[in-house]
Image (cartoon, rainbow, N blue to C red; front, top):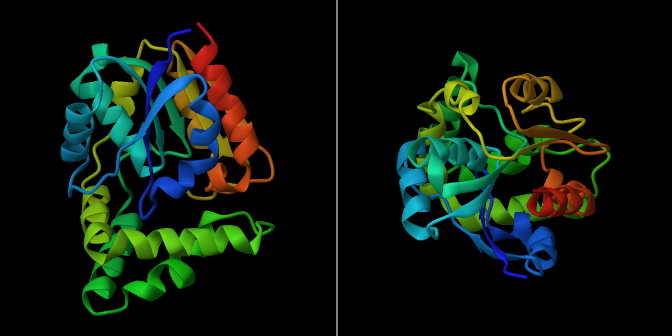
Length: 231
């Protein structure tokens, strides 16, 4: 069986580790590639993805990576065979979100980068019942991504485009997935997206907050596996 090319896009302050469990299993049925997102706009990130991707491919994006995935579809709709959006918000940012990102950018520039993830971001990223090891992994990923890339990523989020119109035109099979306890990109947001997609499936992962790929790795793998194999 010929393997389908699969591009995986991580979220803000996330590296390849967030996809590690799923990639190790999905590579049996897909040619997997993780593309890091290091530009200062969603549009530039999408252009980078298209330059590194094969002619046609399946595309899965988590959180900010999902916003980039929508922009990839906007820029090159015929190249995306299948689309998976995990724990994302396609809406333009709210004023309080913009202020938060600007605050974190300022903190990073003033030498407080190391405190941002553990003290400000982490409490909203995982379920209250998540294992301590998951929190440690998230902090390590942020340290690996570093201050400069975080500033670029949050600048991109501040200017995030409205992806809703693009989504309404998506014709390829689409998986929408979110954690039942995700307070950043809620189940209601994903249900609303599902209403406007013509070929979509909504999967809500129980006992998980925002970081579904780490909190419930097997359930996320199963959903992605089924999405890739379904015609």
